Every structure is written in C-alpha cells, then in structure tokens.
Image (tube, rainbow, N blue to C red):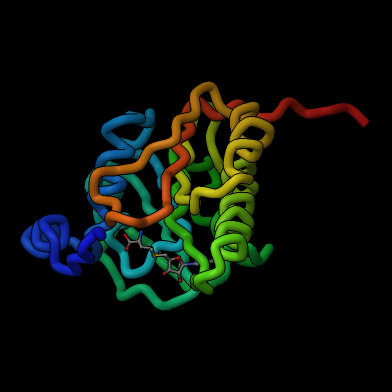
Amino acid sequence: MAHYQPKDRFYRKAKREGLRARSAFKLEELLDRARPRGLAGGAALDLGAAPGGWLQLLARLVGPKGKVVGVDLVDIAPLPAPVTTFRGDAREPAVQARLRAEAPAGYALVTSDMAPKTTGIHGVDCARSLELVRAALEIAGTLLQPGGAFFAKIFMGPDVGPFVQRELTPRFERVKQVRPEATREGSREIYLVATGFRQPTATRA
Ligand SMILES: C[S@@+](CC[C@H](N)C(=O)[O-])C[C@H]1O[C@@H](n2cnc3c(N)ncnc32)[C@H](O)[C@@H]1O
C-alpha cells in the first residue's frame, strides 16, 4: 500500500525555495509541458490560489511588468507585486467582474487548482470537482486572450472523458491530460492542460 509522506522531496524543495506549497512543482511541470505564450509581461489568473505557491511561480514568469491575480474562498497572505489577491468564490458574478477589471486586456493563462472539500464518496467528490472545472472554464472562456492557455485540476471519474471531448476540446487547439510527478501517490487528481484558446466568434441575432 502507498505510504503517505507529508514531508516528501517536493515538500522539502518547496521549503528550500521559499514556496508556500509543494503543489508549485505540479504547475512547474504543466508549464514545462505546455509552454503557454504571452506570459512574460502579460497577465495570469489563478483560481483557488491559497496559500499561494502557484502565485509565486507565476509571478516569476510574468516578471515585474506583468500581473498575477489570485482568488480563493480563504484569505491569502499578501504577496509582493506583481501579485494581487482577494477573497471570494470564483463562481460568483461579482468576483468574475473583479477578475475582469484587474486585467482589462485579458489573461494569457488561467489556472485552476480549485478543489472541493472531499466527502470520501467518490461520485460526489468527482461531481463537485467537475462543477468547479466547468466554472473555471466559463471564466477562462470570457477572460482569456485568443491563443491563451487554461490549466485545471480535476478528480478523475467517468464524466471527465465526455467533458474533455464535448466542452473543452472544441475551445482549444490542443488538450492534454497530465498527472504531474509531484502528485501524491493514491491521489485521483489529474490536470487538464489546454492551449491555443479559440475565441468564440460572435453570432448574429
Ligand atoms: C489545493 S488548494 C490550492 C493550492 C494552490 N495552488 C497553491 O499553490 O498554493 C485548493 C484551493 O481551492 C479553493 N477553492 C475551492 N473552491 C473554490 C471556489 N469556488 N472559489 C475560490 N476558491 C476555491 C480552496 O479554498 C483551496 O484553498
């Protein structure tokens, strides 16, 4: 049986590098694999950002002229510029309006590491995870720049395949399902990595 190691090598590496969460190494691998365009000097949005490991990594990538925006249900201890954070539920329209106002020219990358509080009932946890990914995709659909990238954590379940095929793939040029090396053994999470956002064409009334 897999042995859970709370202080594994990724935990120790995160401590050494001053990163708030070991999950930053998951994002590092996703970025390596997808190589999203427009990040240097651009804007990145992180949904479900607490405590802020992904924000710290994104801040390095966008650099001092860029912008990183993070939102979470819980408070995020402040991080230096170019990071801006606030507390809120990403599914709320008022929160989404603020995310838009923070980067009026849109985002080059939208990430979601949002996770539901788990119940231990696999079907329920998967359904809640999918609901969060749908919300994240809706946000990405309105705030991403053309050609932008979208990364989202999802709990693996029978609905993931149809979601990817019907809802995600039509909106991006490339979609991959990635299980980063830093994922804990026994975890059912994977990441959807989508690049080359196709902006919807306006339909006439
Ligand atoms: C695994 S943690 C994120 C860790 C983060 N990537 C890091 O590097 O520090 C998942 C977060 O998703 C947040 N979350 C879950 N549902 C959310 C929602 N509807 N809106 C905003 N944040 C949400 C949780 O509060 C939790 O802090």
